[in-house]
Amino acid sequence: MNECCLCGGSVAMRTLYRTKYGIPGSICSDFCTILWCGLCSLCQLKRDINRRKEMGIF
Image 1 (cartoon, one colour):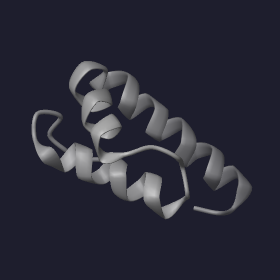
Image 2: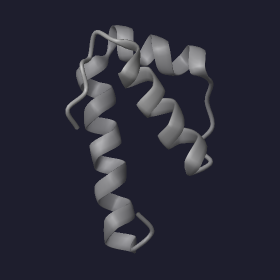
Image 3: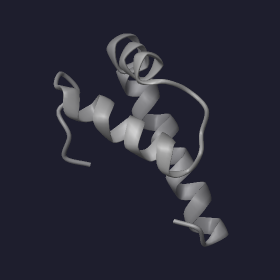
């Protein structure tokens, strides 16, 4: 996704995606997830995108 995992762009991307699709959470939880589990967070986002593409809602 051409995002730097060390900058705020990843948090903004996760927050925007979560808000767009009505996924519960907060900016604080997004920040903590990126900070401590950056790779897990990106994998989670990719899985969700793939699932939404299969369902035709992405």
